Length: 456
Length: 160
Image (cartoon, rainbow over all chains, first blue to last red; front, side, top):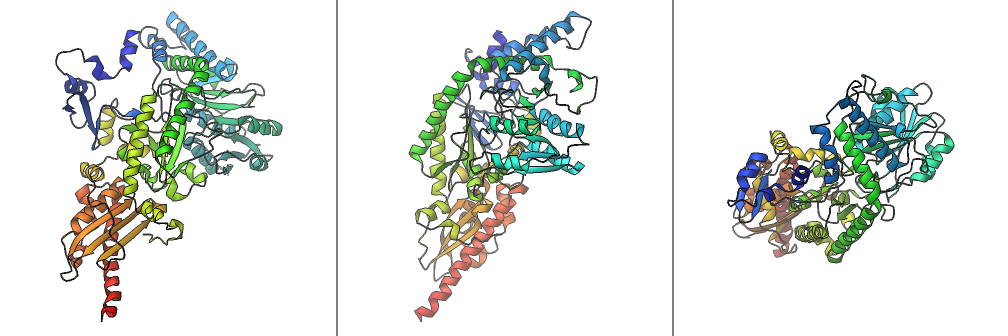
């Protein structure tokens, strides 16, 4: 137990009790970096990729991943060190206790979403769950159902699975979203055909944090008798989910977005009415044949513990995160003008704040915000030079899409971190606006849309 | 190679985002680019109407890169005495235009037309995906020179 708590503390603190400053040797021994860290008084300066940071950056990218909650780590460790049996070993205690732990975790996940434990199947993550849901359902019903309805703002793995299906001869409708990021329910109902086999709409968007109207979509799908799949990786433990109320037939869940370990996820598969899928992993028939492969007990136990903690603390976390989000937004808005929030403010998970700063480019802002770990929807930060497809689907102007920054707030974010993030952001945006010809022209009253730009 | 170094020192590295921007992990900033970003040289504006100033505005907001490069030319000698820039773009674009303003100062107008984007890219060690930033800087220099010559041509008949 003590080991776990120590592990989550920053490394330098462990060595602070020594006479000598062992900073550089300690960090060099534990984590070699391309250039050796330079000692500078009390702070440890880290140099990586040409960027020098003093201390570690503030983490404000909770949508990318979250730190593991120490309580979750405590629950996981025994299953690595002493109770390390394979849950499918039927002949000895190691197997039995491992299986019991897996079943406990299954029940914990199920109770967070209002499901029966028999409807939960563990996988390697939400990407795998999305693959099983989209490809598995359609391939199982390939003789009768040839059409899938999804949205343009889905996660890449859903979109890529749909594209794969298109290559196999299925048809896919990618619904547009309104400018606030929500799907239009009438359009959704109109897009459903007699041969539609699946409707897939994510619950909370990872880039803009918008929460889709789950109950209404579930009702439409139930009326038409079509399985409703949702990618709830960002929604689990953050907004209340009830598979009965929302009429969900398949749901993808991820461990590392709810302060659990990376490398584990769970698929919810409804039993009444039964949804059948074609397994994507062949093997020994584990997880009722849905997903073969040894179930990773420590990871699964971690996910279960994370779900249990989330169930208890969801309300408190939401209140806290909401107030931090308001603090962040008000702090930035009080000192900068022309700040646009991307996506609906009302139907939003508060921990995700995606803002655009007009006349400032996203990657240059990120370069200046090296002491805050955030991400951007800018083209320069993706491999192709295209801005984020989610922002484009919102109808955000191309030049604004280049300027977006996503702040992620979570359970462990403190007010001091928010204040520092505000400080750094305002500083960098002001500096970049001074450097920006567009800001200069806009302030001079020139309408930027009227200019003929020299494309090259 | 950077990817291996990143994996080895994973505890120090930031987590890779799960949005399409995951590829940023394989790119690094050369220290010269970071230097130009942190201490930009020659940021500013000259009076556009001034007869001695040539203004080059290239790029488009939709592409994510707009550069405005201005040169102040000494009428008699044809030498560029001062230059300044303003850029809307990524760190590499800012650095490219900053380098461009440094290199044109004190040179003849004909000379700066020979500045090639490959030289700028090499000076900043730009990765292939950022080469267009240096191209834009070269275009900006040429546009500024062209603007100045146009102004001079328009101004000369009047003076006579």
